[in-house]
Length: 374
Image (cartoon, rainbow, N blue to C red; front, side, top):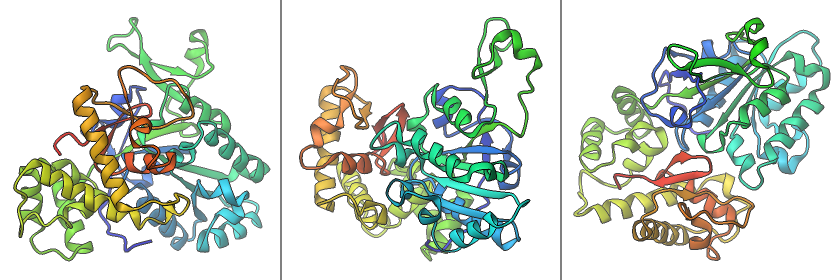
């Protein structure tokens, strides 16, 4: 894990089941910290790719252990190949887990990272892997507090109720109703309207969804100063905004890109040059990602070429939404198929990797858009 920059990240609970509510940058509601999130039996942290979910969860697991409270961090994709939770956990997380298994009363906080990566190759992977975790934990699962992370792209009306059912916890969601003043009422998966009166919707024993908030300006400045040792971070952020790149200044991953494209010393001469610089640095950064070990033949130039082809096709066809590849053959007429444009040069995993980079933003279920200001 690279050096952690303490930014005091905040969360907002998402009670409605509106996809736009999951991806909206300016989420309304009370802003809370990790302590409040961890009051719940099960939580899902939602944020775009490169928003800092993994770093936050790794750091919080470390802080919990340092405070004497059992906590482990699991990259869920590792369970696909390593078969058991004990093998999938690494270093202090594994040591802590083994010690916890030998206890009889302690509560373990299990941070499960990247449900979206587990779902990338097959939609049933999440159900299979979470079910596998529950079976391996056995009766000890009653002593587990769950914290999951994911991009919004896999959130569907059926996903959260399915996850709650696997974890054996309640999931409450606000849905539209013509019988309430604001049009929103609580609904619980599998519970009829007649039984709703007896259900408590605010129980901490249920599954709750939280959006990790984007960085504020002072947080972005602190990140650049502490991780990039930049003394001109404020000027850089202002210039990035003028170049249409403000969105990249709202996440740690985006700031890593901004810091590398030389906006101040060598200003780009056109929007095309801005896009090319961003795309080039995005792919350089992500080509170093150890999560890409199983993507054979991946190189920066292939990613750049594919990004340009997808961007051009989106403009020419007048289709803003781009579909993340899934295991199906049909093609929607109102969505651009990234697979049919980028293949065979990139395999499916490489295309999924490209579409989760900073030059694309989540927009709908299994769909993204090109970063609009590029």
